[in-house]
Length: 248
Image 1 (tube, rainbow, N blue to C red):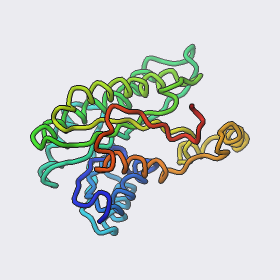
Image 2 (tube, one colour):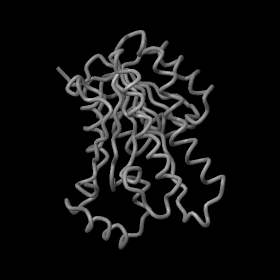
Image 3 (cartoon, one colour):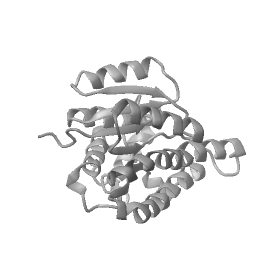
Image 4 (cartoon, one colour):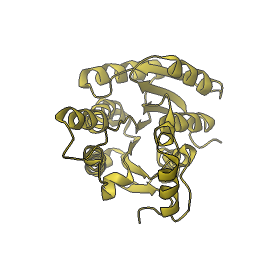
């Protein structure tokens, strides 16, 4: 039997990068996948086809994760289309990196809204269904930057640290109803976002990591699958670093 056979997951920001890797790996493990992104574009359509090709039900939804009402509506639509939801992966995120002295209010607000408020929005919307079911697994994508901070990323770090506090609080609030809440803190993962980093800077990053390489999105996806599955039935309120010992 596959690890996530018969489960349904909502994955935010899943048209590319880590989110897409999670969606595809979950599908390989027998999970039906509802995924969201800001717009219904060619990336979303292509991703839906790739997931469906793995033999599960899949559908992409255009949704602004930072908007409370929009999120409530899309979750209601997903629950109706998929007849419930077992797993929520809060993955949607952006960066607007710059030193604090140059950071604008807009850069701060945008990152907090997309990265942190979206986690509140989707968790609040999904909990209604999970409370009725008396079961569910919520996995929030934090970052090693949320654990230890990073120069030039005060907004991103604050949003990801906030996710950790939120994760632990939700675990304590909802645990009595069989709902688990955990966070993943990825380190230097090779994605479209990190591919834009100059090669000399990327090599310096990799040299500083004890495993001497960047991580693959699939390596984050496998940890997400563990947390989504019944293998982690007694794991809640935790933060798992996926960083090659970069942050210990």
